[in-house]
Picture 1 (cartoon, rainbow, N blue to C red):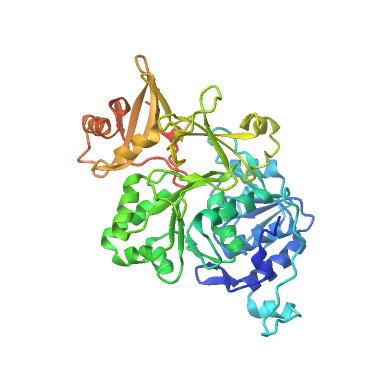
Picture 2 (cartoon, rainbow, N blue to C red):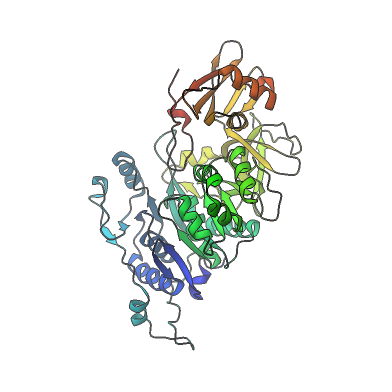
Length: 496
């Protein structure tokens, strides 16, 4: 397998930019190679994953050294951090200079990542190219493909967070599959404002551009002004979560410069949760550009995507990526027919993009896989005859069995969001003596003084989808509980 970062051995132009700070490929190679020598033999290293150059350099250095990196969410509480540190047992933590660390990290050796720029780097490089530029920094030998690269912890919605061990093989496989699907090259410049402690922001948003030999401009904190500035000055791809794209859709009617910048982008990508069809339509209507969605998990990295050269079908996550096998299974594990668009089943996948194990959890690892090496995602979906996948929700929280029907919450949520006066919507099921489960809609209204009634919403969904999919109960909230990625936390909804 080829090196994870081939561009570091043939530096070209800017690699990373965070605000007004940047690193060229030559600078990144020199900084990461120098730090990698210090990390050799370190076991595992934690990374205090602030949105900074230092986080990116620290992770790249650990990858070069073949040392597993454990990204830490700076917003995590002490109990969660204590669990992650106790489980992963890192030998030290990499931070940006001056970062304030919580008490949970007090006993862990700290190493501040010092980023040096071109003038300082030149003094350490003895060999010059014919043009007089510094030659690429010597890099460590490429570790074996199965070497653990990252240990990323799950959100812990059903128990303590589990450490997902991602080998180099999985990262390379998923990034190369996305390069094929998105026609992603070294000429692309990615802009995003995603956190760097999870797959979307770190692997896709930082390691992806570096593997291609392109560059990334991190916004630090997401803003539509930042999107306008970066896409208007050469960036070609925008990565975001639905909350970010929703803010873009809300801003577009009064912001012609934002619309112009988005219209000039090569690719707009949304992930980590479903983007409502209404936001798809508003962005396309204002810019002429389609937002494409992809689907992945911490354990699987990327499974499917709408292709850059394919049909931009709103409400779907596209087709399986190269190298990914995907099937839908029924309640007893039987494989569902691939040509039945009404068959709701659990997505199971296998391929080189999968994780190795849950750290220290052989029981959980064994339970996650079905016979034949198929990973049970817990996500429910239907599949169009041409292979496009439509996710309808999580098996545990979004599959509602009502009146003999299996109903996915996602399509009802999309229908509710199309109704005027609905700002946010979530759908769950609750026990019903007649139906088994009844559909409950949780609504955040646009205007608290003009609530859409339960009867109006039920009629709208019945006409849009089918009568058996209408909500039987409507509850109103000021806001839906969401995590850092904008996903609705349905288990945190108030109990009736």
